[in-house]
Length: 264
Image (tube, rainbow, N blue to C red; front, side):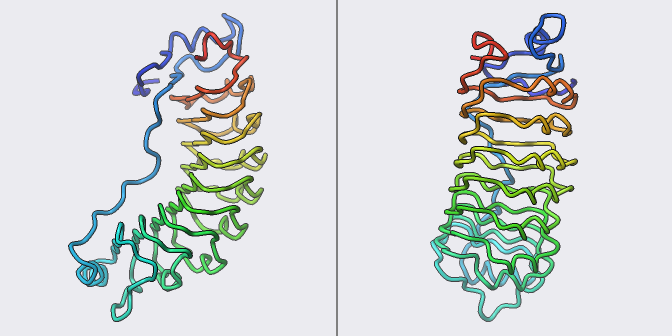
């Protein structure tokens, strides 16, 4: 496929074609790039920090863009400012132990970045954010994702580097989700309902405890798939249907199909 990513250490499309029906093996699409990078950044870049806390709050009240990243905050400092029109909130790199309740008042909120805090749970009040399309709550202390999270119109969900052991079946309700990053958790099985994510383009399941890839992924319009650093021994033959796939990252798995000498 034109524009396919070329990464250091990648097996180019000609080698991917060698896995096709003519050469035996999986029959993965000939355009596929097998890639073994250290790992590209997943998710949107953080918003730039303001010069001072008061200045950041003042600007947010006027622009609808709130950036409080990297301020070591334990409590939300929004008193005295009308932030009800906030559409983007970056609360990353602080010390919040819970999502600040003030956030539930941001009815038009579309983007919420909570990266690198100490959050242990997502309260049901998040359902108030019916405009939310981007949520990054990576590098926190989540042990589970609540079912009501999947009632939001999310297009990007980043929950990497938490303590998740499973993904609820309700994830299949996210029909508009385009990017899902659940890497660096302790997930052992992916639910079959992940095959209902009809808009999913990028899936990062790197560094979990997965032994098997679900066949249902073969029905998705994936462009990027990273399942490196798991315990997967084979790629399902039905993945040959992934005609949009440009990059697959599969290093650090005990691969048998395709043969280990090809996949290292």
